Length: 479
Image (cartoon, rainbow, N blue to C red; front, top):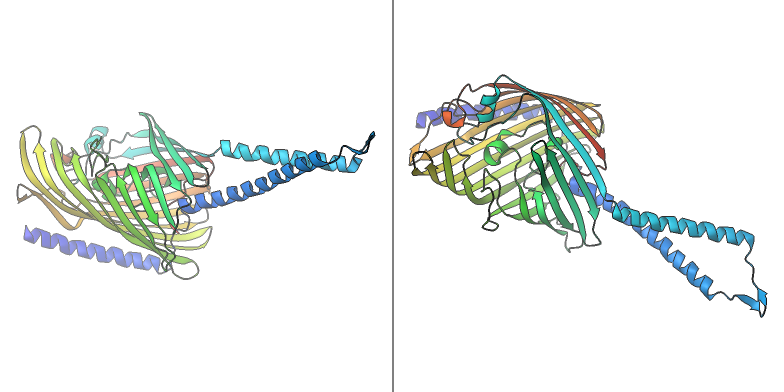
């Protein structure tokens, strides 16, 4: 076993060095951190709306003064003699009144009509595997949850997002997703606007901000599907929970952003589905931004996730109860000299430690399970004009692959799941995206507990994303 681990670790180190050299070559052109963020966009919208409200309040005050002045004006100069308004003054007063009345009407109309976004995410899927194999194909040693992917035409979701300020103290944001099998609330939360010291409180259901990728919705991803580390450690949807979040943006060098989250813990892979015992999961994260010249910057930071686990996704026919801790670090470089040209390199490393009791449902036996596993993804995207080309490398069991059941290390036919992906995009506007993506996937198969069959899946997507309405969901929440 030590020999196998030694060889595996050596090969992993060589692969990491190769990927780092490749990344260094790409990033030597220079990079930049993506500057758009959901928070910044929403705050910009709030500033514009606040300015409009202030202007309308001034007009309202002007109208009140005009009404008060008219009420105080004498009806006659002397007994029996009326004061007639000058024709020019009469026309001027009428126009001012109409202008103020229209502004007041627009003000209340804005309050009653929040900004809305409608997004259609659809794709055509093809694979070298049959649908039965796709449905049961998990990630060897990590998760038995299959791809459950249908060949041919698919509608991933039709989502509706809404945002509006509640008052001077709260904002409200929500996303409802409509799928063929039903609808669900993806996000529905409030943000505070007036806490001191750059503090912000969020509450409701939201996508955790422990990483940039996790807080994105599927139609915002740089690739059609999620990274293997996300699928293996927390499921394809990532961590999207009911709970509360407190963040702090102190005015310090590197523009730090700190946050903690208390979550219900209903994620079916890392926590426990339909959790009813109260919140039992938490996250903590710290993010930093460093400009690198005029057109480049670097975004980076660590995070940790912890919670109780009760899941049937460890392997087919099993049920696990215990505790899970997931630690990670993300880095994003971006070079953006203009709106029509840019290079982004993004990477993320995760390490999961999990221990508890694994029950074999059919046999009725229970054994102690210890899993210490890790993974990484590195991706790069280059934009020129309306086109963008990208590549992504996923690898699991990079530096550690402990899967110890009843004190015995388990060896799988596919000990080092990995995948290589390429994508080509055409973006005719900010509201439309067409993408072709191909993946050579060696993450599943082999063991019957993870779908069995061949290890290789040659798959492709033809994806179309169309959006109408306000731009409410920019990528990431970074400075």
